[in-house]
Amino acid sequence: MSYGAFMGLFDQHLLPSTSTLALSLPGALPAFLILLLSLITGPLLDAHVHRYLSATGFTLTTIAYLALSFTCGDGLYGQGTYWAILLCFLLAGLGQACFFVASSQNATQWFPHRRFLAIGITSAGAAIGGIVYPLAIRFLVGKYAFAMGIRIFAALVGSTSLLASLFGQANPAVPPRPLGPLLHPTTWLDPTALRSKPFLAYAAGVACIFGGFFALPFFVTNWAQNKALGVPQDIVGGDGELPAGAGPPGFRTYWFLIILNGSSAAGRVAGSWVATHVGDPLLAQAAFCVLTALLALLMWPLAADTPAAVAFSVLYGAFGGGVLGLVASVVADLVPGGRRDCVGQWTGMLFVGCALPALVGPLVGGALYARYGENAVGWFTGGALLAAAAWMGLGVWLRGDGERVVEGGKEGREGV
Image 1 (cartoon, rainbow, N blue to C red):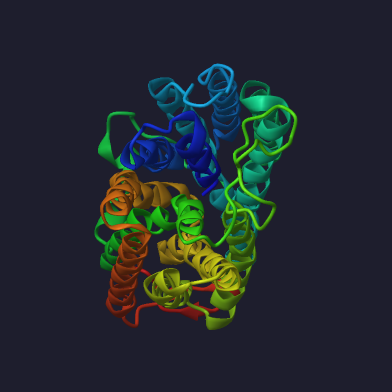
Image 2: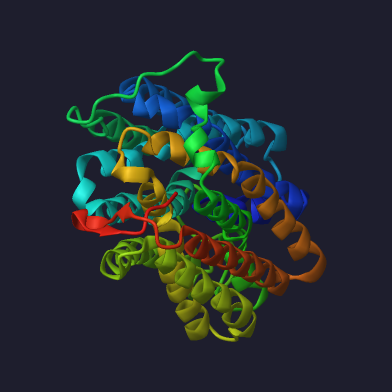
């Protein structure tokens, strides 16, 4: 969700002649790779190869953002090189894929009896990054110009990746799940998951989430600018001052993205708390999908002033945090018998089905934005989330009255 900061910078200054559809691709491509490669990283994490994956992720992400600093010349108007920027985000996606499944999988291993809350807290880290990184980009590029600012940003990304590499290790009390032959399908695909109707219905719902949810945050700064809900800030100088003609002082449009991500962090933890007390993360997530969809369908097009837009950002981030923060919890809940040695594999299988929707969704959002305006983006996101809620409701119904292990060791319905 941090790509919105780059999106505004590219659209307004570095790549002004590039279409909105093309500018959506650098943000969608990393999400596609992260989800696609989950099919590989999930079983590798079950086999306890965390150190190799995290070292690879640290190296690739740091190099990607360092290379990005060389793609826009002196950072002046129109000096961006689109193909080079696209390659940098592709490399960043490869690096981020090494960390994506690890956070939730580690939480499941270390905190089996409080896994909903633990996964929610680790998921909130992504939203916190959505606060820190856009602010860092704005400040560093405004103060040091694009090239040096992004190099310092690369050092920040590398430092946080290194911390994740050092501390994100497997629980030795959970035996590793040995990898089978690399070319054998069951090494990467668990037949039990493929026979689980609730899991398949849930996978369809999550695909709808990844296809529609992120289109809206991509365009939140453009939405605010077009509706005169804030003041756009051109951050191209090296002195930290606004260039002439950038607009009067006021509420900056990029703050809507910061607010959205900030409330998402709280929503992810709160969503886990709700799931713990309801006892059913799948049902809780379906409810969050409906609430978030209503915000996108109704409040996004109707927000007519800055206070209403701020309220929308807070609510969409909070309820959307509940949507995103419960994915790994539901997967862990659907794994039969509370097993912890195959959560990575099931999570990877779930996410690989979301890769193509995550790639196409923002592109569809960009096309709708270019042709019909920002309201169409909200309708697209809202429709996708309602479809997700319907699939999740089907998953709840298909699960029926079987037995499953739930939070705290109590018994309820099982997810197969």
